Length: 143
Image (cartoon, rainbow, N blue to C red; front, side, top):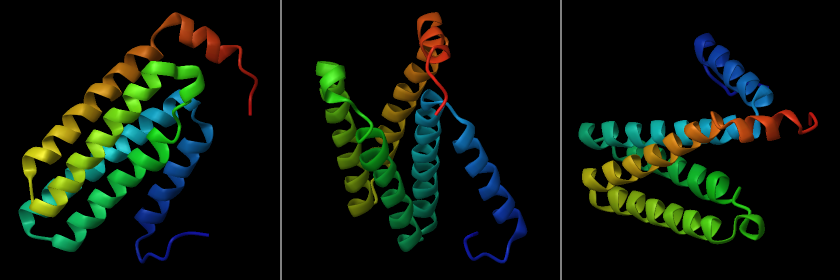
């Protein structure tokens, strides 16, 4: 049920994350994905500076996984049209920056990926405060 860990605090944290995911709106889930990718990039930068090659690679891989298999995969190209296409291309660019950073220990590439994700996250946060979005979410049936 829980990941094998000798740390009760890690198990408790995992339960908190799982509970947050289960109770979050789709909009909040996207924000959580941005947070996860940004945390992974920050960890990769730390590991890069500390010379922890394997850990850096794992953190970069986690960020790429979140971007490709969650953020990009959630795009609706039919409904989103050109905006979804542009976001998909931006996610591809961010992924390429992360690969560049990992291969060449390029802190600037990590910074660029992080900056772009923070800008997208800020835009999502602003959308959350839009009354039209709030009204739309209120009219959706519970899953």
